[in-house]
Picture 1 (cartoon, rainbow, N blue to C red):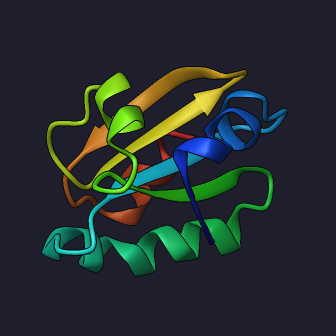
Picture 2 (tube, helix red, strand yellow; picture 1 turned 30 degrees about the horizontal axis):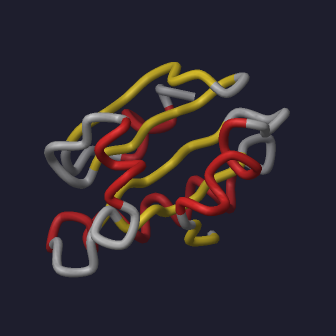
Amino acid sequence: MEQISSAEWQSKVIDSAKPVLVDFFATWCGPCKAMAPIIEEIADEHPEIDVYKLDIDENMDIAKKYGIMSIPTCIVFKNGEQASQIIGSRPKDEIVGLL
């Protein structure tokens, strides 16, 4: 799973032909670290979607644009638009249900 930056946001997320799951996280966040293996499994098991991580501390402009107030937050984008969102540490099946 790839970590992206604000510079790649448009091309990787907004312009993607596939649905995109973005995991908004921070390196210091314990629940984010706990969620990482789950997000990795989803990326491996669902090749029909693109899965990316975005560090909110390094990409505050994107975090602000999407109103990220709590982490981890996962947002699904379809056709460049926010389709669904889940906040907090959640079980895998709940995240897959967003797709």
